[in-house]
Image (tube, rainbow, N blue to C red; front, top):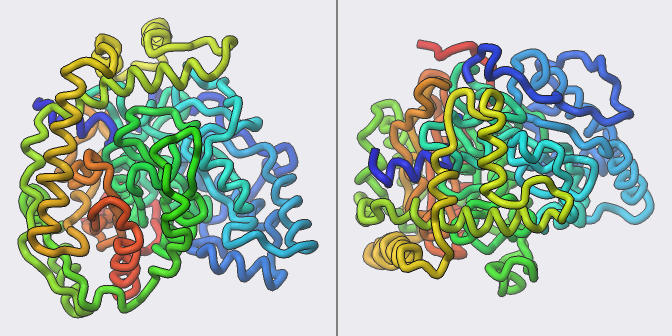
Length: 542
């Protein structure tokens, strides 16, 4: 396996339905005030409901924030903990009802704070919340860890009036532990499954955020991405996934891999919902220098929601590497191109980003160095009483608990990272320079300048693979690396289905071009309206 392939497998990408992978640690924790006998709800008014619809229901008095939260919690119990047993939610917030009650009282007395007031949102379990929930990255080593402070994005959600409903399962440690990992599996949460076809991967590492949003267990969710961890499960679960420019959303209080590539982002069922979240959480954070200048960034991405937004846009087609690997995917992509042309876009075909092969092993080298430095800093910030203060401590914990933490795949990437030196090392600095040159200067920037493009498009990936704890993930094409390594924005939007499995259309571009990508994605979404809710099929349909 080449270094390039190793690097993709490390953070994008999904056990078996048998007992070894089906355990769910302590199980989903319910709020004290929620009854435990919630009846299964195969269908409900919450299916496919948008943030705007929920706001209208609360405005009209049809529902309160408390009643909406109760319905989502009942659905989590019915669909995630029982029924199809997705294992997408690790724990629910024990304070949900009191938070919702406070927001209802505030709405009655002063009106809503904004479009997220009372909206239930799930967040990935690598995002700190200073409450009664844990932040573990799915690891048993941190299963009891309680953050001393909210992550900046958790603070922003609370300030906007969102109800943080709970924490979602993920590929443990955001899929940086091993080369042959299984996306969606964590020691704490067991195996998350794809709600469209239950024996298929949800992809990762934001597996639970993707599966839960697709299955209508929340109004929206937050994921994180280093290379594909929002956009890949977004495609696999028929969602809109937005990986922002690195620095648009703060990373402080998020269990890290890489300060040059990590970013949180929204995972939603519609582009409009993604735009609402994108603006609400954008802001300057003194704890994350990359957010400097965000006060000048767009604060309201809903202004980009133009159904005629494709007209006159110059869109380049990245064919080399990103088409030709899967016939059903190519057919769906051809259909998408026809829609774009019909809606007035100028299609430049091909407009290939030709430099990805030049990255070699540089991306993985950068990530291993930064993993050691950044994770040590995060763990050290948990306080003197935290049992694990360094990456070395976590490696030792995993070795002592091999039967629970490493039943199928190991921790060779952790071990390689531990052997790396400081960020002043020549190997690191050389690899970082190579990444920036071939992803930015000679990559996305050069392609967009040469062809005078507003965006670059391609299929996000092939339909997802079966869950396979023996061999790990088996990717059949994926376009996430150029934007991920560059730190540039990337949006995936539903493009259709093959054998009942979702496939996404990717749009990426220059740094800070989120508004343009949102406009194009919204116009395509409105022209096609391809997303449909999952049917929880046991296996693929012929």
